Structure formats: C-alpha cells, structure tokens
Length: 253
Image 1 (cartoon, rainbow, N blue to C red):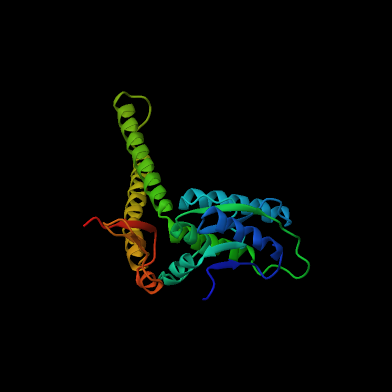
Image 2: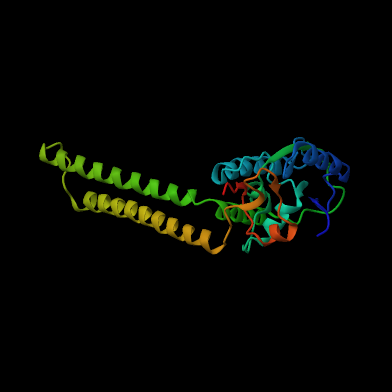
C-alpha cells in the first residue's frame, strides 16, 4: 500500500468515478478519517430501496453506528484506518461499520447514483440477508439481550397467570386448578426461564467472541513529551502498535 488515501468503488459503476474527488477533498479539508458515500436518489428497484432502508435502520439500532447508507461502497479511507482493518483477526468483517468504529472522525456525503447499464447484481436476497447477519453478529449482542428480556416477560406473566388462577379458585370464581391450566402455566414459565438462560449464555459467548477476534481498544498516534514539543512516532512504530480507536497519549513524566 503506497497512497495515504484508499477509495473503494463497485465495479458496476453505478457510483460514477467522477465522485471520487469530492470524497477525497472532504477527507483532506475536513480532517476526517473515513468519508462514506450516501446514495440519496438511488436508481434501483423499489424493493431494493425499501429493503435497504429497513436494513439501514436495523443496523444503526443494533450496532450503534449511525449511517444513512450502509450499502454504498463508494468510500474514502485514510491509510491508517485501512491498516487497522487489515490487522483485525476476523473471518467475516463488515468493512463499513468496522471502519467507522475504528476511525476517530467519520462522516457521510451525498453521491450520485446511476442505473445499471447491463447485467444483474450478484447479491441475491439470501446474500443480502447473510450480509446483514455478518454485520449484526460482528458488532452487537443486543438480540441476545432482547431474548433475555422476552424470557423475563414471559416468566413474569406466567407467574401472574398462575397466581390469578390460584386466587380465582379459592374465591370460587369458576376457574378450577385443572391439569391443563397448570401445565400451560408451567410450560410458559419454563419457556421464559429457557429464554433468559439462552440470553445469558449468549452474552458470555459474545464476550468470548470479542476476546478471540482481538479487536484492540486504541492505537497511539502521537506521544507528547513533558517538555512541550510533540513527538510523532515513525510509521514503522505506528504499524507495530495494535490497531483500534485512535487516542492521544501525553507523557508528563
């Protein structure tokens, strides 16, 4: 890798290459580490636009990384961010979200979008769903936490139903403690407990996954000496550091 800026672009040229200088200019003048393209006026089918809009909202909620267009591959990255991505030990990294998480400053810019001139997209509906699974499982354990919450709600409702049935039978409200009501209440109670347990197990597995992929917490960009003059490490020293969130460390000793 020689250049200081890396630009990605789909081979179908639905994003015109003439948009590249716009991204590079914003990257240099705005001091950003990542500039993401945003296809405001997409020239795709209505189904693709609606599916993409729903996927963007779900991804933003689950990952916590706010982006308007996760599917636009017209993006500009600084060299350091690309090196950090390449150093991450992951089998299926989702580049757009990972780059924004590793960058100190990221932004979006509106880019042009043209209709496909020929051929068909290689991304079938199943591939798009698989891509969303990669994104969600790489950045969030929120679905597992939702499963625990759902299990807790089911368990509480089962206990309330059981208590209500017991009280009604004591006061002769016509509700008996028959075998079927008891079995249904116990079944839902066990179902809620199982959901809560699965959520907790998934939380532990998610923590193990975070440790295994070794996504670092920070990278040292600049070290300031106590005498005032900043010391910028050489590129080889920066590359030797573990990649991750960029921080500025000051040595006051």
